[in-house]
Image 1 (cartoon, rainbow, N blue to C red):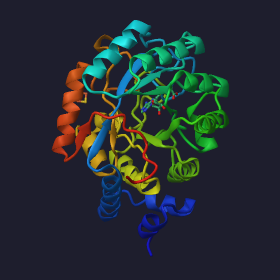
Image 2 (cartoon, rainbow, N blue to C red; image 1 turned 90 degrees about the vertical axis):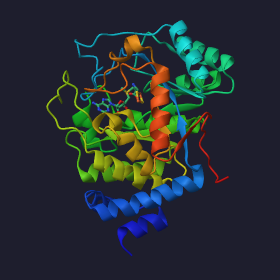
Image 3 (tube, rainbow, N blue to C red; image 1 turned 180 degrees about the vertical axis):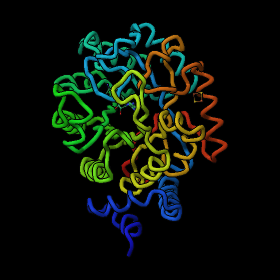
Image 4 (cartoon, helix red, strand yellow; image 1 turned 120 degrees about the vertical axis):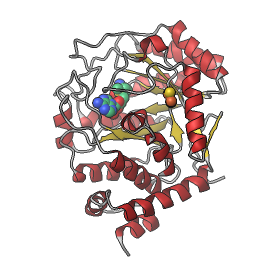
Length: 348
Ligand code: SAM
Ligand code: FES
């Protein structure tokens, strides 16, 4: 039995086998075998449905200083903004009209948005839209804070682990941050009953195949309901400005591997993938992804939420973005649905 058969039959591999498999990403036959199986699984569980999440990038203030990120604290050239509660609610109103049934509030770690303000925001949105799911993506907090947001009505939380390798983590983050805390957060979120999302960047500076193998083993152990992976893309105002972007091919290969490892997972084809390849998100869908996250942020602020260079969808109105993605998905043979798109633990 070769390692692809082994992955398909057992849904996991050893670290060494994962490393070997990752080394095969340019082998077209291997990639096709993986994507055929990933697509089969995805269709069996989710049909040809694509779930959409309305992404509201509500603040680009951040107290952290991740070396790769365009909105890191030490980037003096970033023009900072913060949406008001009213502006956020307008985004939700508009999104609801457009058929969104999941809103994602994402931002830097902005101390102005205290737990009281976040709790108030979450409960207001949930009261106004009881049939919508609300996802938070606002970084590392205490168990108590996560608990308050959950009690206020938050359903899901996205927190990429970024890398499961301590050595690589240290090369990508300042001393003040720790991998241990990030992983603690993910286990807290799961314990509190959030549908939890982890993930990592593909092709981050210094990343090796062994590092990615470690990420895959970590995902298998954590068993998150969502996994977000996208290629690293340099940002001109960071220390990694001159680093090459991650590989689209490898990202797509890994989407298939993750679908096979975690068959029920909610797996987005990310904006970063669409940024590096004009049909990257369509390719992601065909390789096992089942989620897209169109931008619902006000057009006036979109360029300011610049995590990396040349980010797509920064000039489009919410409706244009939604229509564009629906068309793209249809062309690729999928159908965008107006549905909360919850994790399905059992095949219906
Ligand atoms: N502050 C929250 C957090 O840390 O989880 C959410 C916002 S953070 C900007 C969202 C994600 O953007 C990160 O988890 C990271 O993986 C991704 N990201 C940041 N810089 C990037 C870059 N240069 N290329 C690709 N993705 C990047
Ligand atoms: Fe935003 Fe195409 S998805 S414009």
